[in-house]
Length: 427
Ligand code: EPU
Image (tube, rainbow, N blue to C red):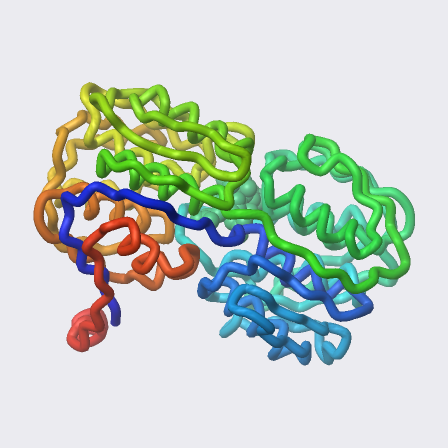
């Protein structure tokens, strides 16, 4: 088992290049199944969620070849069985995108119920609602989701709640259906637009992605394409917060500043300077950090995936900050860990009240999930003394080369293999 060991208190300075977006990559990789020809994906982040997605394709019979560190050629035309077993699906929430893409291509899919970060109850009723509206019969049988259709027919799909995953699955399943599908109350995240752009580059006819009504006119064939995945908005936001928490000065490169607006806006309220350029932002701090209130919302609101990181920053700010988590029921699991580092945070249901303490102290902590893990890295970078973070496999699901990138910015962070840790965990 591996740990990060961070000696805190160093200002982050220099430049960091942001990788491709995890949540776009894990949708686009299964979407290659819909193509009738090979595809080349560029700017693919080198993270474990991507390796698992590629492994699933490979196990189903696709030809998957890395032709550069972040470039993959995928020929999914040789898929034998549209089945994703439990051993593969359990590692990752996004394995449910194989349902939409296999159903869209083969009119049948059998995929184990997904795993991923435990953030509270994460039902898939809206995904199944979309498949059913398109004419598929869906059932859950011994942990597997079965979806089958004689033919998929364009339809009107109205989502009861805004769901990133259900919007993506509705697009994947309808792109080759007969006729027009109208997806209403759709999610608007940048990765939804990226998936639509990818599918359109293969010859799909999708309009309105990025608004709450997406229109998909089904096409018969999709051709091969070469496509570069957008930069990761959350990885960028995480480095922005890390720069602020260490009172550093960092140029964050390969970003789309528009995607960062809600994060930039809150950082500025906290007293952080953010300068925007065409494809980079510079983050620096030259005054005190101050309290603010944040409520997480679907895009373009403040992203839930940045809530743990910005809450960590607010433990260092003056005054009382209030965080309302409106997307997931259980996204304050990092709070107990931050308390071990000296944070003063009270949680009442969906609300966390943070009393700024100015300074955190290093301590041994455990990453409970991906973004919570990133928050603990930020806490460790800003803290006095040494922080040891266990269960870093969560962090490696979504951050490419995080320790190398932080070290290049001046952080004192190393990854250590702790042989006893696995035994301790098993006891
Ligand atoms: N929901 C339902 N029914 C559904 C689907 C969702 O009730 O059928 C609820 C969820 O329980 C949640 C809300 O709707 O309360 C929003 O969930 P959504 O479906 O939008 O989330 P997701 O697709 O499961 C994706 C990202 C998450 C990110 C959320 C919100 C991927 C693979 N995951 O999850 O990313 O937090 O959208 O933006 O894209 C992360 O990267 O760390 C991460 C957790």
